[in-house]
Image 1: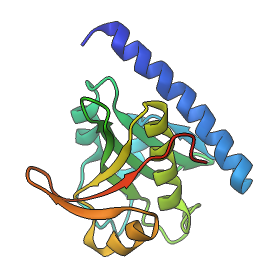
Image 2: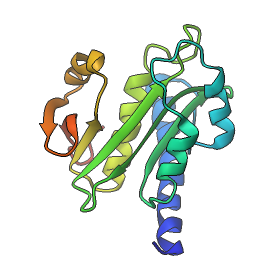
Image 3: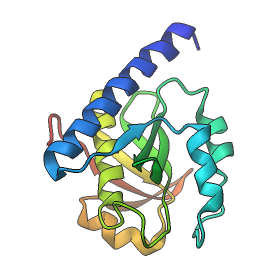
Amino acid sequence: MSKSKHEEYDAIRRAFYLYFQLQVLQSTGLIIEASPIEYSLLDQTLDWKGRRYPWNWFDLKRKFRNIPARFELAISVDGELCGLIIGKPSRGRRHLSAYYLEGNPSRMRPLKTILLEMLLEGMRLYGDALNCSYLRLIRPVEGLLETYRATGFQVAIGKNIGLYCERALKRGEI
C-alpha cells in the first residue's frame, strides 16, 4: 500500500479522535483522551489484574499496523487507559469490523459503566467517516450478546468468521 494511503487514513483518524472527544464532552460533560493505540499506553495493560482475555495488545497492534484504513481507538482519562478497540473495514467498505475490544478490569477505573457504549460510539463514528453501511463485532463474547442486542446488533453466524454481531449504520446518525 502506498505511503499516501497511510497518510490519508492517518489524517482521517486524527480528525476522528478530535471529533470523538468533542462528542463525548458535549454529550456527557466528560473529558477523555481518544487516541491511536500507542505502545506506551499498552504498557498499562500489563498491570491489569483480573483480565478476562489473554490477548496480547502489543501483538494485535503489530497485526493491524499495516492496514491503512484500520480502526483503532484507545480511551483514557487523566492518563489512565480505560479501554481499547481495534478492527478494520471490509474491502468494499460494506462494514467496519471490530475484532478485539477490552476494558480495564479495575473496579475503580474511570468510565466503568459507560465504556462499552463509548467504544461502540467511536466505532460508529469511524464507520460513518468511511461511509460503511454496517458495523460488525467479530467473535463477540457470549456473555455480552444481550448487551449488544440491546444496542441494536443482531447475532449471526458467518461461514468463514463464525459468530458475529451486525448493526446497520444509518448516515448521519447521532
